[in-house]
Amino acid sequence: MSTTGLTSWAVDLADIGPIYPFQGTEFILFLAGVAFWIIWHIWQIRLEDRTYEDDLRHLKDPEKLERAMRNQRLE
Image 1 (cartoon, rainbow, N blue to C red):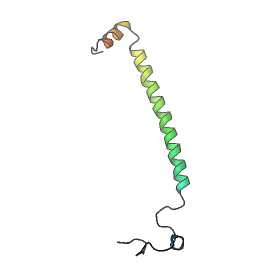
Image 2: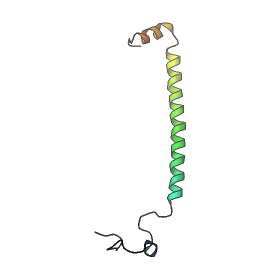
Image 3: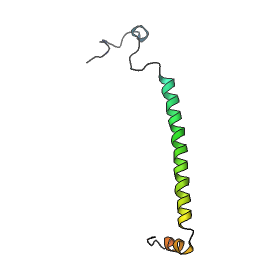
Image 4: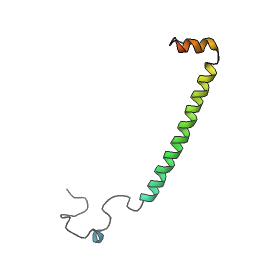
């Protein structure tokens, strides 16, 4: 099964043109991937900071902290 009309790879690929979809968009896709990666890290840091602050606020009471250290259920 051939989608490009080629029956043999023994040809000069420069003569047949692009052989995969979205040829020429590699740099744009790279930039989109890097931007997604950075945005994900920022989102993850903010989420972890919020969770950490909630835990600190919840365990401010010494009794709750002691119960948490003994692996007892907190209310």
